[in-house]
Length: 376
Ligand SMILES: CC(=O)SCCNC(=O)CCNC(=O)[C@H](O)C(C)(C)COP(=O)(O)OP(=O)(O)OC[C@H]1O[C@@H](n2cnc3c(N)ncnc32)[C@H](O)[C@@H]1OP(=O)(O)O
Ligand SMILES: O=C([O-])CC(=O)C(=O)O
Image (tube, rainbow, N blue to C red; front, top):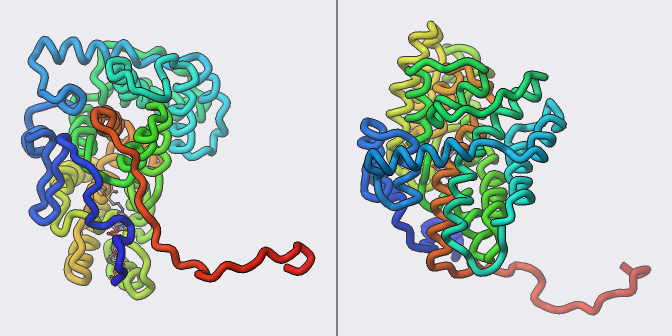
């Protein structure tokens, strides 16, 4: 036991009205609405409105909000040139991080110093609108495909699926992605949101904050775990090999991707929604082995370590079943979390204070004279 909060575990660093993460109960709500209710009765656009404007929209507000988002999907020519010239074997999260940073170069509203919240609100929405275009355009460009003009007649989820495939998606696939977007939209002071808040609290600009967040989400202990899950399932290969794989990981202290959580001590409340969709989709695909393997891993981890599945565990199988390439799983997480990051940054700026925790110094206590270079 250390005498400080390693990894800031348990430290409360700010106030937020956006999402309530109840770790012992396994509950998650956004501004007083349970995610269980939101996935049943709202769209990602409604949830984004909720996070950005503090209320669920009525029909007229939703129409105006959706239109605003849809009209802001285009990218500056300089960013498109970058997406076309980026290496075809780049990590799409690196491309996304760089492109979002580049967006700041082309946006005169990107200012450091005293915040202009009215302008920031527009920047926030623009980031939600443009992030899917970046991911999809890069995915097409790296395959040598054309970049179709953005459309304004499709929902956020539907438009992303349209851009990556070039075909209008079915209603079921659009609904599945929409639900995944809602479930990933916000999550308290997770590592990437923390990064975004730390960056903006120096009164840096919005694009810098989002660049920090994307770089943080990429890691396999955070958003990158969804890609790790499918790679792990493919590596294991079959249900019969799961037990030996898990035993080996436990014996060698290797992490099982998609399992465990800093805050949830019971099942992550997003997991059952994703699990249900994964079961259905893999059945339709005739590839039920992925879900059977996942269930066995989850069972063993519960029994052996008392650890449960997190949001990344089943989202991987959902995206795989939608035919989405593995290296776009984390960028899809970023697309939906952009709603939460931007809302959190707007909220931070309402009553901001610099984040500056302390370090417990463990270096030499006595000072040594600096020796001349030839004597070191
Ligand atoms: C969207 C999200 O970010 S959700 C999280 C996504 N990340 C993952 O799925 C990666 C796998 N999981 C993990 O690495 C961790 O559970 C984290 C990073 C999510 C949480 O980490 P922490 O709260 O720091 O817990 P920590 O890593 O200290 O683990 C505590 C104990 O549980 C074990 N443990 C935690 N997660 C796992 C896991 N996935 N597989 C095996 N053992 C695990 C640790 O080895 C440790 O065991 P010990 O006490 O016997 O040494
Ligand atoms: O809250 C966390 O630490 C990680 C997480 O589940 C998320 O960001 O969705």
